[in-house]
Length: 229
Image (cartoon, rainbow, N blue to C red; front, side, top):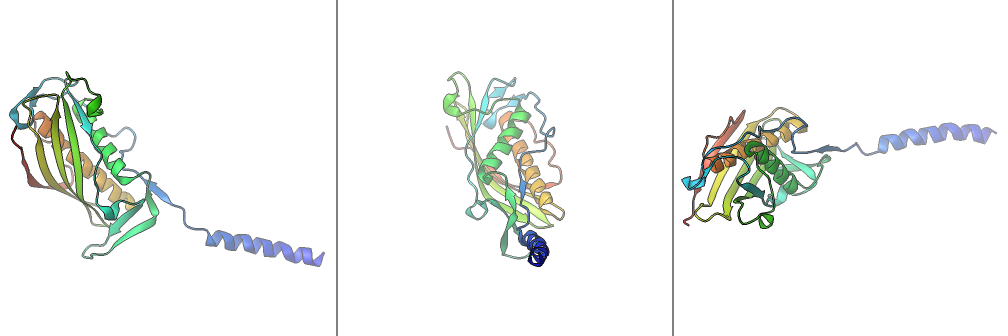
């Protein structure tokens, strides 16, 4: 009986120690906007890319956002952060992307573009030849998360016309810097805002209209080129 009574507190202590030894709970993040918050899906009008074509109503063309290329150092499940003024970066084992980062960037960009332009995002090879398509290629050169300071999205993007002779491709590069507060959620929100800004720049090239408000982001335009026909 005595042995049984001594066993009870020992089991309770073991349970407490096991709880203390348990790893911290992981938190998961997404670049998709919260429900109910997205870019406006108004119809677009204006000159097309390179001034070669006029888009008059949504639905006369489609977009096809291709798989995104991201830097190797951030291509991991953990959110990777840096400190201001330091070359060191740290993967946060308890702060994880809910799905692969390249797919999240692609989906967030496609979602915002379709909302802004009021058109579909489809596979280019699935479109009928009568439907013009803009293929969107994105290479992320930098995807920096500087804790408590800023995010940096440095990207090269290309618009490629499909099923429309006479339209020009465009290749552009831009750096988008967004000031953020402390915490991982603020860093994620900063890059989410940067993707919206990038989307507005791409939409402006397609429609010929000025880009919408850039919010709190600072945009460094590194230029565009339009290869010959």
